[in-house]
Image (cartoon, rainbow, N blue to C red; front, side):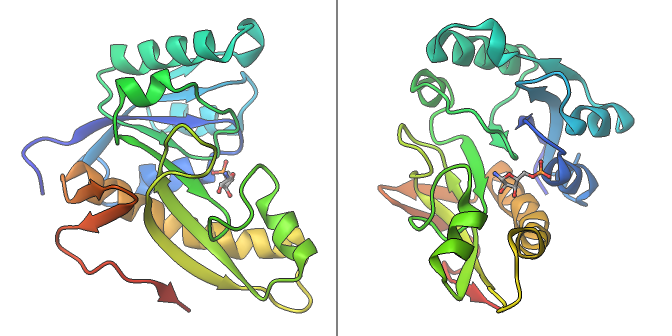
Length: 212
Ligand code: GRF
């Protein structure tokens, strides 16, 4: 419990199931409050989830900006105007320009459907299946200037089954995402995460890997 919840902006591009998990978490409105949901495209399904929950939405359309820096600036300004102290990238498929990390230092969180540094990029689940790995998973990390690269906050492994296709594997990965992302955002909002170089210290929990 913190004195007042940390306002956050959640950035989405798609269906927003991770946004839903953040909305539904008991930590919402206690540790953090979603003050704004921003999509880079008007048709993102997550926008409707936000509206249903009574959360403000904005579209900062990628197509309207010629340059990544301009797009990022508009996005940061929108989030700052909503009072956001953090950006949570929940299925947000655009790469932010470095100016975002200057404006939200160690305060941008991303969820990625693989065990980084394996399988960065937009097709991590397909890449894991294609490579033939038997373990993949979820990484929640701070965002830095490189893609899918910043300090790792939490990882959890997910076994790849012999009969998995990308859809079945992604479904199991997402159920882990929905559990761990609110946990991380909650810990961040309570000021319990400390970045030390590439390492993130959890002040009230051991830094440990979870394998199920
Ligand atoms: C998640 O699997 C996330 O890891 C990836 O995109 C997916 C977004 O799903 N970056 P959703 O929009 O939260 O349902």
